[in-house]
Amino acid sequence: MTATATSTPAIGQEWPEQGGVFIGTRLVHGVAHHVIVPGGKEFDLADVAFNDLTTAVADRGEVNGHGDWRAPDQEDMMLAYINVPDLFEKDDWYWTNKPYGSDYAWAVNFEDGYVLNWNRGYEFRVRPVRSIIASPL
Image 1: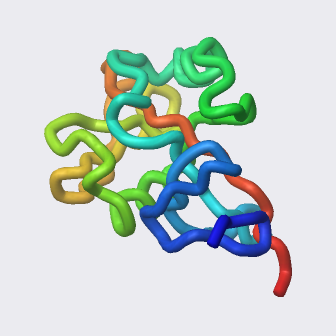
Image 2 (image 1 turned 45 degrees about the vertical axis):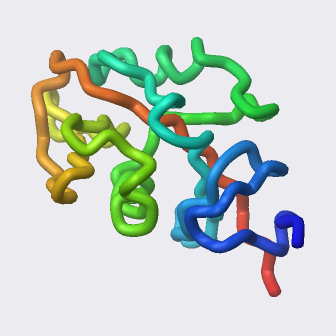
């Protein structure tokens, strides 16, 4: 069966109409959103400083037919760690778009699920995500 906005695939499965792999559903400002990553490690942006997240994702442009990719929230990365950790590089860190104070930001490690704050000058991987509002039943 082909997935649509009202018919999602199983977690971890391709959702071609939405440009990638469905990693789960989470609340964004009280509204359920389906979260999609463009695919596996080949879609990582490598060696990105935190302050360059938005620009790096925007410069990537359209991926898999969609142009609304964004830097992931911390919740997006934790959803990915819980549901599809094998799609991510185990021995590296992934930035979230969540700052911590004026000089630090949160990043996630997919080896063990650690979430730590790192100096914004460090360069880590970024996996763009996109989300769509989950249609009511």
